[in-house]
Image 1 (cartoon, rainbow over the protein chains, first blue to last red):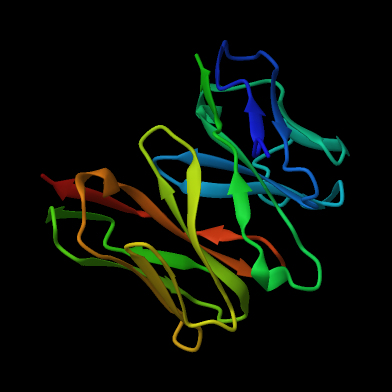
Image 2 (image 1 turned 30 degrees about the vertical axis):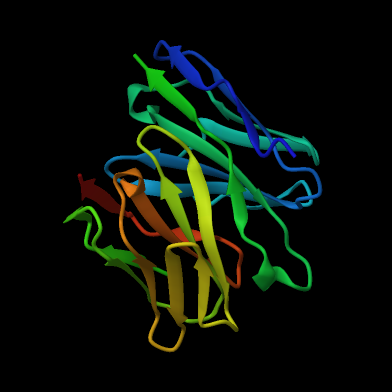
Length: 117
Length: 111
């Protein structure tokens, strides 16, 4: 398995532009998470999906952020319009639930480093 | 609300020493606890997963323990090497599945 795949690896954009980050989870995983990492706040959970359905988006900072999961193999995180304070590394992770949920950990992608200038 | 704390925030030790990293969490109702390693500018690599019913897990020179009742976990690294230098993150999976991370311990092994 190729693991969790994120694209692009790096993104530099101007303030006000729309940014779309992409994630392909591990096949068979029914949970998908989007995290943001900054030096000041560490890893913050933005939103997570179970079976393609958003379960909790309370971590999404504001309406400029939106996430979708149209099918089990693809998710996007969109920022529109982007601002300099959105600069961070955005990680996607996937994992399994089910009856033996305690057995399963999460696998992270390599992240997308976003710089908004 | 579940909170995860890692102490110390940074640690430097000479090569060859054994060391312990600490993680504490406020709510013992968890499914599991996971230790990750993050190299500078890279993603997270899972090191060890401890289920809620387990007390420890071992992988090579790494040993992780879990004491749910006291809300604590430790990561023990034996015979440290310069290649162990990284940030180590502890994460708990509570019953609502919102895995919560500590801020990590930055480890530097001195050659």
